[in-house]
Image 1 (cartoon, helix red, strand yellow):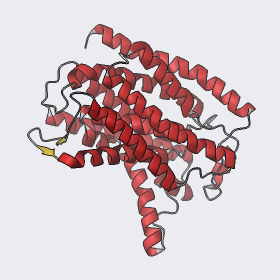
Image 2 (spheres, helix red, strand yellow):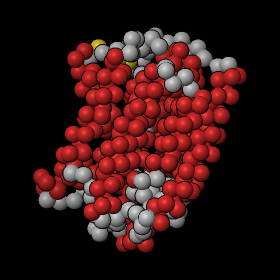
Image 3 (cartoon, rainbow, N blue to C red):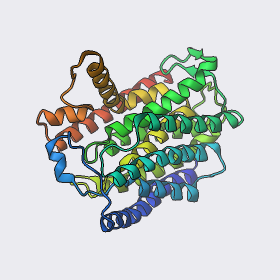
Amino acid sequence: MSSMMILKALSALLVSWIISMVLGFLHVRTMKGSNLSQPINPDGPEEHFKKSGTPTAGGVFFILGITISALLFADIAHPYAYIPLVASWTFALIGMIDDAVKMTKRQSVGLKSSRKLAMQILAAALVLWLHSSVSGLQSTVVTHPWIPSVSWNIGIWYPIVFLLYMITFVNAVNISDGLDGLATGISFGPLLLLGILAALFGTGLHVEYIQSPIHDGALELLIVICAAFGGLLAFLWYNGPKAQVFMGDVGSHAIGALIAISALLMKVELTMAVASAVFLVECLSSFLQIVSIRLFGKKLFRMAPLHHHYEKKGVSESRIVNRFQITSVLTTVVAGILFMVKYR
């Protein structure tokens, strides 16, 4: 990587943080002045009622910060720069609608699950179309994450896998966004690993990849990832306990989409699944809870997702957040080790 690209990536992080900090200050003041806040789930942990009146939709300001920074430092005409931004904004708009419905109805539940899922499928299909319409990005092959000589040509199943991957990550981050600083803190590990891999790919890690533009485009993606890191650092400034603002579905949808599409562009889907294990376990806990209740009439957890289960058991919010974040760092390290074992 040239010194100029290092400078651009670091500058993107810093500028995104500065812009998001300013926009965050304005967002919190505006939302409080307009009395727009996150409705609290009446069935949730009792401690959450203290958060009543906290402004929401904070994802808006860090997505703007990320986008402005990326426009300043990345080659926005390059697919590895504009596809992640389009993916983030497309899913963010779904989250924005959901947040608006919640605030309008003054209820903790916004869009119906079926309607939200339909919108997510359409959004993922748009991203898939962008991905497949760019010369060189078409792919029907999944490479094995840890055995260099193994890959699978999944043919017509690739679009379905692509859609499922994106929708799963978006909902996993969304479900994990339930405690102050939780989703943001868990995101840092996977984003850091994505940034490291983008730097490696962009500087000559010569591997047989199905997607030929990865070597040329990875550094553009690195700038977007660094901008995202800066934007989330600014958000955490306002979201750390006690939160001044929640990210809302607009923010969680954008983060999930960015992580997923970055992994898909770099062909590190399974490696990123390991790094994002905390998100995926949170999502799985909610799914298993629903299945158990509908099939057997019993709860597996005191409350789903998993972080609420521990709250119901009396574990403090700060301890849950800290331990989930530590676990996320460890799963990221494991993913990194497994990846480097493949390419040692």
